[in-house]
Image 1 (cartoon, rainbow, N blue to C red):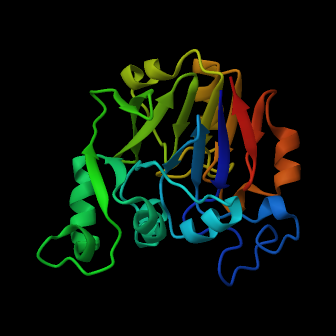
Image 2 (cartoon, one colour):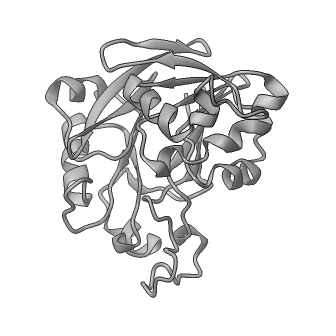
Length: 256
């Protein structure tokens, strides 16, 4: 059995959006207040993080997480990686933190975080990592669990999702090829991005997400990477099909 904690469930700007007068951004409902998307997965005292965005520090404090055993990165965009420097407290206590990422994402890190990853520019006191390169072609093992990478396209940018047992996490999806779709059948829980009701050039909207759900038929689906244009959490939840849920920050689920 393992536990999934939704650390953040918003798209790149978070909710509320800075300076916005959108009614959802002004909502008092805590389920309408969303940090950038990330999940913490726990089994057998092993803590696995998927993505480390700009709200990472706040998410770790909220979740009382004091140990981080590994991090999977889906892609290089800032809302999924900008918290990298805040891994320092874990690295100071534990030593090198294993990270799993595509070579393209590592190349991005070596440019954006040269003071961490470039040995010639390395700054004292930065976090320390054990780098593990991954791709859609090969499964890999983390904490005794076999993980299957699943490639989706964020418009034209390849993004990796991950399947662990009968759970899968897919973010920043616009399209997914049938070969990759085959990797997410027979799921107990699917976590899938869905930005809003209206179409979007780089993200699934609700209708497109439901089309994927209807194809692979997971027992339950939780939607993430949500924009304030989606609407109020409580109102949207009433419109969703059976066993499809709008996730929210702090939501915890357990999977056998």
